[in-house]
Image (cartoon, rainbow over all chains, first blue to last red; front, side, top):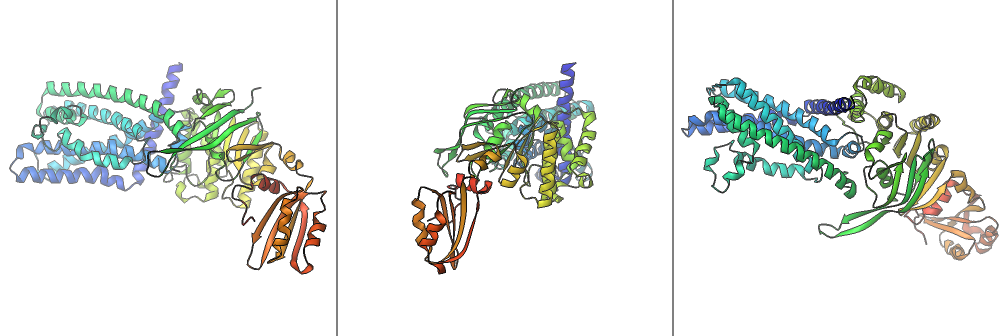
Length: 265
Length: 329
């Protein structure tokens, strides 16, 4: 009974964070660029590049890659930006002073921005089909949806983990901006990782976006085994991210209480 | 019954970076502070800017850790039992920030209610009740960014009261409010006290401290300089008198020598364009007035007033070396 009540309180906090994020996103015009326009521009660039360089066989790769870039942007950039907004609004200290875990609140907000970014995936797929005439065949729709769900959960947890680290720093956007394209390149969402130098390729295996891209491509082609492998690895990554985020938030809370680094002034 | 707040030998040191260098220097914000608040009491913390008031409130709110010493709220330790403390305290920092400004007042309170782990079925009603109590019902659905300073201040207090706290921490609750709004807020604070709430507040206003507080504590340079009732603070000064002089230019030097007189507690000189304002705090029994009249020519004195020392005079005397004095000679 007690654990049920505890779970209910946890879900309440997450839900409140989720709703707060949805309401804020609706009011921030910049979100439209980040979540909707950015993936569309990426898609245009990649479709033109592959089509006019005579590599049409990579077009489905470009479409999935652009969609994933949108989800990644929402999961990291927007989630980290949330934390900066909390700091600027001087709510971060107040959040720490409540009996709830900051992690649950951020998890709720991260979930909202990542789930809303699925809209960008849908827009990317539709634009590819109806605007650029890319023939997308999804052999296993259920597998494709399972992969989308798996990727979303992994990126929500990764976004929460990354945001925990940015509780400590005030230059979060700069770091996330700098990491955006290297992650895209390393994850093989812009082009296959085989074109990367050999010594870089093992690092790609650590990127959730790599497994996401691999699994989604496989689902489109009907490759059960690759989808299963990708989902398994994404599940392991999710468990690690969840554990690491919990540890980080607990450790960081003690550190910021000691260092007084939560407030801007 | 446990005291609501117990502070024993509390010190807090910040390590501040020197420019871009990696070296840090120590900044002592609080030094060996001892203070206690009984349940149902209003304790006011006074002190000039930078005295350590907000640091102390943040330690009580479990946002900061003490460097040394022990702090307990309702018997819970702020270092090890912060979760328990957070269930029993309400916090109001005041000022323009501290909200999701694009969202409505009602939305803000609803989110904070969830963070204070209130059961979901009671949140809507509790938020409506608090909005009503604070006179915010009419603007409840407006974005916070459109609210006036006074309304935001009320919203801060509303958030503080939302979790039905046993201890309420208020950091400068009436700052920036017009006199009517400040009066209404003070009335509410007294009403909350009558309902048994323990209130710990910081303020720069002497009249506010006198009107609201059962006891006051005065911080200066991170050290506690006085703890007791406002009347005890004044009582300690009833044998003192304050004299104000306005004299012509050049005449100020004739009274400057009085500062070495043991009976003179404090002298303040302020240079104006055509005259000097001098205030002197001295022991009532000492014949200072006759001495001044003897030192000055009749034409030197433009104005002369004398009165009992107020709480504010006593406060300025106590913390006067913190940059509050202008043009001291």
